[in-house]
Image (cartoon, one colour):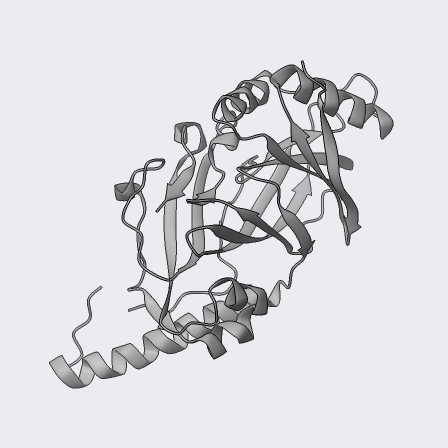
Length: 293
């Protein structure tokens, strides 16, 4: 079984994409590139921690407002980008040990209009200027974003029609919490600080649908950590998710080395299940989010 390479979480190349978030450039017609996105999810059945980091650039110097829909209000804090490397190292080491055991057993064979809403959080974290907004209707969302961009000096901001439509769908599905993240970009690729979101949810959630107004091909890899393997996928179908390796079990002490808050979320229990999910295809084909139970 092949070892998993470092930092291949959401690998994309040569296309203009907004894989986990909708993006609104302050300057019209500028393309945003996210050649690498990294994500790790821990879910205990009631609450989720989502750790995100991206490499980004633009076709010209601009600021970008990124929009992340969530099922509930998140607690937002700075994360540690080293978590991704440590988690990958842990997976690789456990795969290596599993392969040694398998090799001894079978000779080396492997298997493979109310108020627009309100801001509940605002903080600058590294290169990110983050606001959490409770939005109650589509018109409120549009008005809020336009006012927000105007307050940042953007004249006549343009919100893509496709993004308006997708946001309306989220609101109809009772997603009323949105994270707005402003980052400054130029033509050089840079790695943004990891941001951690913790929020209540009775299903594992990762937003994908919000990107489907764009064009191009995307290949996603998610680190997923849960007490038990998940079997119900009412959003993106299970058959579209590829497992590059068998799930591994990790202990509380091992998880604590990766992320202490994730270990606390999972109640310091041993035998937690960690695996990588691969999802790939044309961006426009993703009409559902990743939801699992």
